[in-house]
Image (cartoon, rainbow, N blue to C red):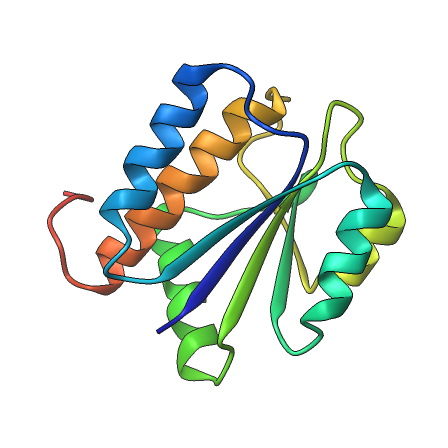
Length: 143
């Protein structure tokens, strides 16, 4: 089963953000093993990434490439078929991610040229991962 890690600076303090992420995590529990790591800073993110050097890391940052939901699904499927067993999505805090963290990632992904609070980015990411897995599995959520 594909492992997906979300590595984020800081936690979700407000209950409504956590409830939204929990709902999508519950929906995708049969499709992947999702783990969320809440780290204190970029140094902790680098240490976490070093623990799984065989995985594929994707940094969420404004200068990253924008993908459609379908394209994200295709990328996740291609990575999985290509032998990648763990995909880590990395979300920075209020200051974003350092260049050092971004350089350790295999790809940079952007939701939009707009800037979002990291809590909302985490909800959006969790929903998009669920949507991508649903597309891969032929479900009807995306329709």
